[in-house]
Length: 94
Image (tube, rainbow, N blue to C red; front, side, top):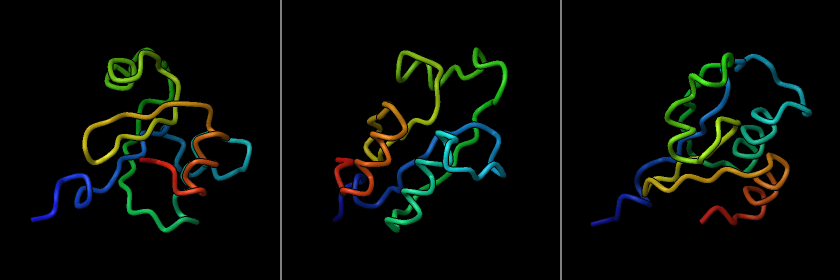
């Protein structure tokens, strides 16, 4: 039986501006890296404003900034979007 980490897709917690697809936008930068790498993921839209409404993100990462990734095993990853995109492209998510 496969463990949950290999069967559950990861979740990309991003702002609600899903239509904004410019390279300078942190959420899009990470989503684009996931797409290019062919990673199976689910988008979880968080409130764009006010950031204080991102309660789950703040509870799990200690801050309200996006994007954040929630792995299939429940582990959360939040770091600079450029570094996160680099790790995705390198296959280093965990």
